[in-house]
Structure formats: C-alpha cells, structure tokens
Length: 326
Image (tube, one colour):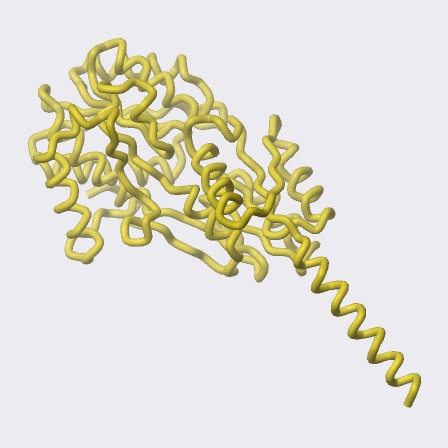
C-alpha cells in the first residue's frame, strides 16, 4: 500500500512538473526572408505577436532567417527549448514544419499561407481573391486612363489569387476598365527586388496604367516609389503602406497575418483555418494618409462590394480552384 502511495505521489509530481513546463512555454515566431520590418507580411505578423504580448504581458521568442537553410534550424531550436506554439510565416516554411512537428508531438505549430496536415499543426490560409476584389474596385474608380496595373512577386497561386480578385473587382466597378499585369519572377528572389518592381511599374505606366497594385513583398516598395515618381497612384499590400508616400498610395490591401499570429499565440487549433473578409483576414486601409484621394464615393462602393461578398451574394473566383479568372 505504501509503495502504491509513493508511486501515486511520484506520478502526481511528474504531472505537476509537466504542467509547470507547459505554463512556462513561450510562443515563438520565425519570420520569412525579408525580416520583421519588411513593411509587408512579416511586419504584419510581428504586429500580431506584439499585440499578444501587450495584452498578456508575456514575452515571446522570434528569429529572422537570413538563408533558406535557417528555417528548419530555427524551428528545431525553438522546439528543443520547449517553445509552443511555434509559428512559421510564409509558405516556404511548410516543408520545414512538416519535418520538425512530428518529432515534437507535445508541442504546437502553425504555418501561414500553406497547409501542413499534421495533428499538432494549424494552417492559416487566406481568401486573397476577396481582398483583391476590393482593391480592384478602388483602382477602377480612381483611374482616369481606364487602365489599371498589377505587379506580383513570385508567380505562385497565392499571387494569382490576388490578381484574379483584383481584375474581377475592377470590372465589377467598371466593365470597360483594362487590367495590365506583370510578375517579378519565378523564384524566391522575386520578393526582394525593389529595383525590378520599379522597372515593371514604369513599363505598366508606359502602357497607360495610372493605378498600380503591388503584391510583391519587399519588391513592392519599389513599385510604390516608382508610382510616386511617375505621378500615378500605387496600392500597397499586406501591411498598411499608405504612409510610405502620403497622397500617392490610394489604399493598402491588408492581408492580416497579424490576425493569424495573434490567434495562434492564443492557442493553436489543429487543422485548416481560412481567413477572408468575414473573418477580418482581408481588408483595405483608410487613414489620414489617403483621406484626400480615397473619396467617400469610393469607400461607399467598396463597402457595398464587401457586404455582398460577406453575405455570399457576390462570389469572386478563386484562381486556385478554377485555374482561370472569369
């Protein structure tokens, strides 16, 4: 009987130690190439982590990779320290998480912009076509030439989703508008080439585009700079970029990676979580920096489109499903 009681006491002690370990576990975030102050999706993710920190008063761990090989190294290092949840920002982190997560089944992981089908991983994906639709409405209402442009980063399905939604929204607002577009490249380098972004913007402007949406990460900084220099309007993406060139950025298409990181830090729910307009995962930015150019009439039209999409009466085509843009 005494041995049984000692065994029970030992088990309780182990459970208490395990519980204490979980209580001490810190969340962690691994940023994608470009760093947390890229003025784009990494920075939005950082803002979500900071929001969680401010609300809870608790710290979190973070790492900014400099090379592709560091993705798995950083994830594994955090896991070995017992960090949980561990969030990887960006689709390139899917494979490293798929490699590391099964080795630490007691920990929780999250990936943004990809799906990893494991029992301890939450995958956040976005309905980019819904946000792109609203940006297209704004562009069509702002253009004077009847031509609007789009500069994408790496030519991948997510960026095609943005483009498809953008084109549909523009034509919904003005069936006669013409949408011109260009992709920066086919490799990861396409996200960090502002000079190339500026070049593509000048090419689109030469063809008549006077409003250009960028969905190109760090490359997009060059797009917005070129738009300002040319005297045309740019549209930012991911983070609120209205303040980069006040009066020259019509709006910013917000892809709320901050919402994904914040929700993951609150507690990972394994499976796929989809974020669109209804869930606050996509939006447009309106503030003092674009107040003079984003007119009340434009905003009213955007809100009409938003309401129609949220209610399900208007359904923008998802390029990844249709493999074409209607």
